[in-house]
Amino acid sequence: MSRSEGYALAQTLLLTAFAAVFFFFPGPLLFVSRAALRSGTILCAAALIVLLVSIVTLRRVIQVAPAPKEGGHLVVAGLYRWLRHPIYTAMVALLVGLWLRRPTLATGAAAAVVIVFLNVKSRYEESLLLAAYPEYAAYRARTVGVLLH
Image (cartoon, rainbow, N blue to C red; front, top):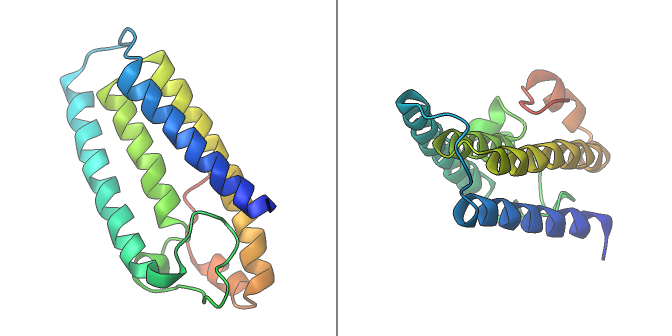
């Protein structure tokens, strides 16, 4: 298994673990807030829209593994015109939104682990994109990266 495939597998396992924690280990709520519930719902809805629009924009070059797809191209249209990682951004927003809907320690911890992982994965992905596409450095300089790098 390549390093890129390892990242894809790890992401799948971490998201599955988050879902298991969210759905099967409710735990005590850290707070009860109608505003947080509404905010979480809105954040989740917005994240799903960003996720779907990003997937449609990527079309044939989408994959979970961070390595650029063989025979692919750099996508700089749609949300990618302004935002380097709209799918990761949507995933982070969805995790935060779900935590706001069920604010437990376990859900927060699981979301934090996934968010840290996505940050590490995006850094690795950017190094691969820089190596694969000479124009990526200029693209990166003119776009926003929402994750921590």
